[in-house]
Length: 119
Image (cartoon, rainbow, N blue to C red; front, side, top):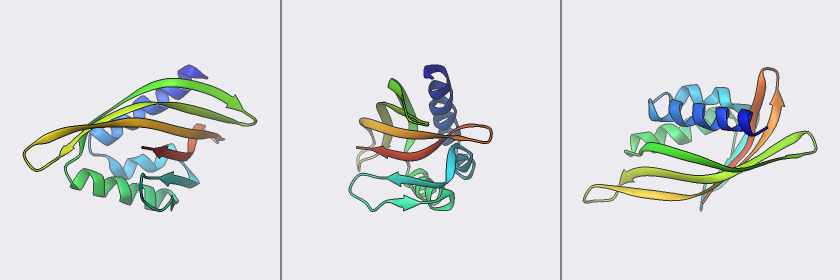
């Protein structure tokens, strides 16, 4: 469990950091939800990719993730940890950080993100 979740979050971070936001869709279930802080829930791979494309366009970079906990719940995995990201703040890059949580569902080729939320 831990190894599969770690591989998924590492590959997600690498894809975001290289600017491949359209490629992020491969990490999500077709009906995936993301729950950004202070915003409405977005549903589906297209909405997910558009959201992260906007984040990149605003100048956010250097996403790093630490996996803290993984456990099985019914047919899902629940993974959580800490994240950090550099982004604009007027005078230069600022470090933003917080907690994240993913609910993973088994897809045809492995685990996919069904719910992705962070603060």
